[in-house]
Structure formats: C-alpha cells, structure tokens
Length: 306
Image 1 (tube, rainbow, N blue to C red):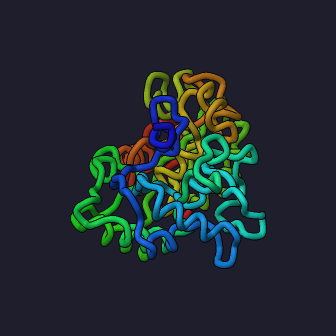
Image 2: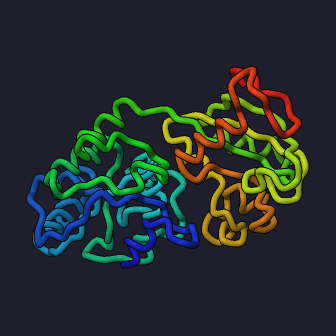
C-alpha cells in the first residue's frame, strides 16, 4: 500500500506521478526472471541468496509503470540497494535520498532489499516481456486524450508502443509562463529549463489586461514572460520542474522545485505549466499565434527560433 500510494501523483503532488500499465501477484518467479531483475552483479555475495528468495519466498507484486525519466527517478526514490557499495551502483542511482529512500524505510527479506526496479529502458522492456503477458498490460486513460502529459500511440499494444517510443521519442511543446512576482528571477528559472534539456522555441514578454489569462499570467496583472518549450516529454518535464501548484505543498514534497523556492502562495506561485498536452496546444496557439495574426497582451509577436 505504501508503494502504490507513493507512486501515484495524488492530491498533494508528493508522489512520482507514475502511470500504472499493469499489476499482478505471483507465487514465485522463474529462474530467468530472477536473474533479470536481480540488482546484485554477477559474483556478488548476496546475488544467489536474493535470487533464491525471489523464486521461493513469494508472493511478489509486479508493477508495470510509465513515467518521465522513469529509471532515474525511481532509482532516486527507492534509495540504495542494501549491500551494494557506490562502485556497484548504476549511474541512474546518482542523487538518491541519502536517508535510504523507500528501501531504507521498508526493508524486507534476507537482504533487506524490498523493491527492485529496471536499471534502464532496455532492461525494462526485456523485463516487461518476461514477466507480463500481452493481455495483462493496458494503456491508462492518462496516456491519451485531454489529460495526456506523456502522449503515445495507444492504437498499438503496450509493449509495441513502448518499444517504438523508446526508439523514436516524439518531441512536443508545452507553455511556460514566469509570472510577474518571479520575473526578477528569470535568469535562475532559465537554469531549470536547461537542467530539463528543454529547448526554448519561442519567448515573449506579455502584459495582459487585468482579468485576462489569470490562470497563466497571475491574478495581479503586470508583465510576465511566456516561453514555448520543446522536448520528448515536455509537458511532464516542465510540470515536474515547477512542482505542485501550492508552494506550501511543494516545500514539503518537492523542495528543490521552482514553486518551492520562488512561490509565495497558491495565487502567486511564480510559474505556470500546461497541465496536459491538449492544454499546451490551446495555450500555445493563444500566446504564440502564427506570424501576421493579431496578438493581445501588449507584447511583441514571437520570433521564430527564440
């Protein structure tokens, strides 16, 4: 229960925001699957005992999840693998919670390692094929439609779609607005943009009339900065960098996010992030109309390539 609660986005914004593609319990795992998911390298003294525990000490809960930058984020959230020295840790473990993460708070089994996760995308695809039948995986509603932040072709099977997405990730755009109360911190907020590997396709200054575009530009009026950002999962990436909309919640659950650091209140929370792909498309058309179209808000029209 603690695992499932933590992996959901949840009302407080403190979870990982994972999409659940499938879940099941198994009484035991076959040897090839134990070898595939074991976090201990060949020759490590705990590898044999861990594989034996997986194959003999069921039941085990298997979860298939999808989220942006998933392998790194899950590794950080889980914390170190008990018994592994830093030299054995995979690169995705950099930045893990030094207090022990989920594994440190919920140890289990002879090794104390209660949860294992895919080391990288390739390993994840292999493990999905090993551990789940095609009919046991399904696209969630959040993978498509109005609420999608990680859009994907859901007309194909889950494994086929994930393989295609890993091989040819789709670049999309999202809208980011630095609100008036945080405009003086623009240079610091741009560091978050670079950290997220987001390309700035357009940038413009806005001074919307009071009462217009309040959800994006703030309720008090004043000049703000709007950007159109692009990368493979731009909507989810920028939303994750911003953190929960309420800065008080952000300070508890995402203390390094933009809103935790620069936000003053839920009304004055420093930045706007498109909540879904559909919203990003609507907001992009509103704030960055094609050249020659009338613009509102007192700012110059965007210039291509900015």
